[in-house]
Amino acid sequence: MIICMSEIICVTDRKLCRDDFLSRLEEIAKSRVKGVILREKDLTEEEYTALAKEVQKACGEKLIIHTHENVAKLLGIKKIHMPMAALENMRIDRAYFDEIGASCHSVKEALKAQELGCTYITAGHIFATDCKKGLPPRGTGFLKEVCGAVHIPVYAIGGIDKENIQLVKEAGAVGACVMSGGMVCENILKYFEDLGR
Image (cartoon, rainbow, N blue to C red; front, side, top):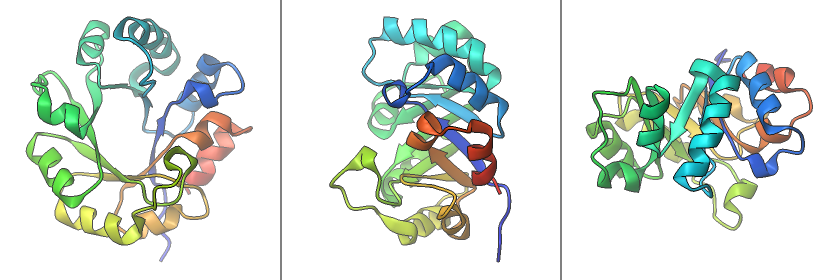
């Protein structure tokens, strides 16, 4: 059974980018992506704010802020993605946000994220990826467990490409998150088109 048109979320890593980061994000935002998570964890809040202002111009409503609730509010952005530890320890203003995501690595975390008001989660890492070198992937069996445990949308993350995205759809994920592929691909529109088939 072929399941068509996954939702795709692009996660940024400007250090992987070999061309102009903002121009690339502008092109990505023109593609079929559902959203762009500005991850950039090495920046101070001040540096992140400055970058987010520029990325907001490039991505518009597709921009999802990572971790920095104050930055989201400053820029009027109502989408945020949180690491689980941050979500559990911070008193995030859930009423402000239209979309709250969390990165989950177990069924227990997925259930907790749902309980804490997340509107979606990412689950991974599913396949081997350079971003998690040396860590064994959790696989599609894990993904299926997570998808079966929660009633909010689940996005697979980790090593997703056009060759294996069908497997994550079959496991119950609504779509996938991609990082390195989106940051380095040559033909951006074709890359995201191929993933979304």
